[in-house]
Image 1: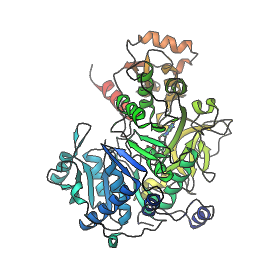
Image 2: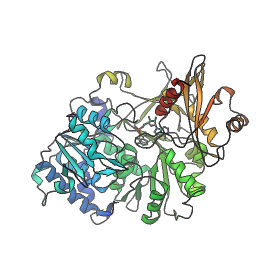
Image 3: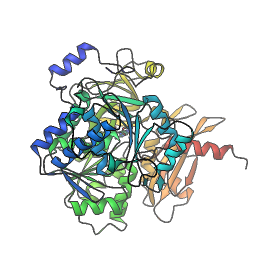
Length: 543
Ligand code: J2J
C-alpha cells in the first residue's frame, strides 16, 4: 500500500475478499465495463452538455492521453477542485486510467486548504475552474504561485488565463500505451475529512474498499438504469460521490444530472425538467427546499418524478424530517456517513417513524459498531455513547498522520468517529450529536440537536443552531442562533414556547441570537465551530 497509509491487517483483507466485498475491480475498469454495457445511454448531464457512457469513456481516454503528455504518470497525485461540471468526471476517470490519484477538493476551499492539500500529497498538478460562485480560482492559483506553493502544472476549465486550458489537454486520439493498471488493494484517491475551519485531513481510499461501498449503496438505494440522480451537493464530497452518489448511479447504468448549486430555484427546476428520481442534500438545504415548496416560490413545480430525498451530513431534526413526504411527495432516506468509511442508511421500506427519527443502520453486515463510554467500555443497549467502527470500507488510518492516528483509532483498529449515538430498539442508530458539540452546563449535558429540534417546531422558525458559550460560573451556557421565516418571534415568546414543550430548564437557551444565515462547511452543513468562534469574538469584544 502507498507509503504513509495504514493497510487492513491481512486476516481482515482475506476475510473481506472471501466474503465477496472486495472484488479486485479498479476504477479504470469500472468505467470501461459500464461503457460497454450502457454505451448509448446518457451518463452525465450538466453545464449544457449531455454525454453518453461511451462518450464519457472516450473522453476519459483522450484526457488521460493528454495528461500523460503533460507529464502525469502512475502514482502521481493531482488535486482536483472542480464544481459540478461533467469535466469533473472526465478528469477523475482520466486520472484513474493513468493510475494517478485524484485528491478531491471542494469548490469552497481556498488558498490555505489547497496549499495544504498540494503540500501534504506532493501533488504534481492542480485542476481548477476559471470562476464559480463568484470566486476566481485563477487568482487563488496566482496567490499560491507568488508564495511558491502551486504545483508547476495547473489546468483550468474555461478561460485559462496564463494556465493550461483543460480543453486543450485532451489528445486528438487516445494512446493506450499510457494507461497503467492499478492494484485494486492500493489507494485510488484521497477524500477529505469534513469541516472548513482547521485543515482537512487526507483519507486514503482503495479501489477495493470504495467500490464495495458504491455497489452496496446502489443496492440499498434500489438504483437501476432508470435512475436519474441529481448531484445538488458538490460532487467531490463523499456523500454525493458514493452514498450512492454519482458513482453508484454509474454503477447501475443510470443518469447523473449535475446542478451548479443546490438553491431551490436551480435544483428543483432540474428535478422537474430532467425527471429526477433521487437526490441528496444536507439538512440546511432540505429546509430551504421544504420552505420554498411549502411557503415560497417553488410551490408550482412538478416534482412527481422524485421518489427519494436523501438527507445526511448532519442531524436532520425529526420536526423537519416529518415534512418531507407531505411537502415534497417523496420518501425520506436518512444517511449518516463519513468520508472515513462507515455509512448508515434508513432503508426504503422502513416504517415512516424509523425514517424520520433515526439515522439508519450500517450498509454492510461486516460493519462493526461499538457504542462506548469515555473509557471505551460498551454502554448498555439504548444508552448514548461514543461511536467506534471498523469494517470493509472504513480506513485504518489517515494519510501521513501517525500522531493523529494514535488517538483517532483504537489499538484494534476501530475508528473513533467523534459522534455520540444510541442504538434504538429497532436496531437503528440515532445520532445525539458530535461529542465536541455537546454543551456542558455546570455538569448538565445539553445536546445541541435536541434543543434545535424543539426550536424548529416553532412555526416562525426556519432553522436553528445551538452552541455552548463559555461562562465563568457554569463552564458553558446555551446559546441558540435562530433564522426566522418572516417576522421573528420575540425572545421571550420563543423561550415560553420551549418551556411549554416541557424542555428541562437547564436546556432552555440562556441567549438567543436572530441571524440571517449560518456559516457553512464546504458541503453546506451548518458550522457550529464557526458559530462558537463568532460568539466568543462577540463576547470578548469590549462593550
Ligand atoms: C448526524 N450527523 C451526521 C447524519 C453525517 C454520506 C452522508 C454524509 C457524509 C458526511 C458522508 C449525519 N446525522 N445523518 O461522507 O458518505 C456527521 C457525523 C459524521 C460526519 C462526517 C456520506 N451524517 N454526520 O457527512 O466526512 O458527525 O461525511 O462523523 O463530511 O458528519 O462528515 P463527512
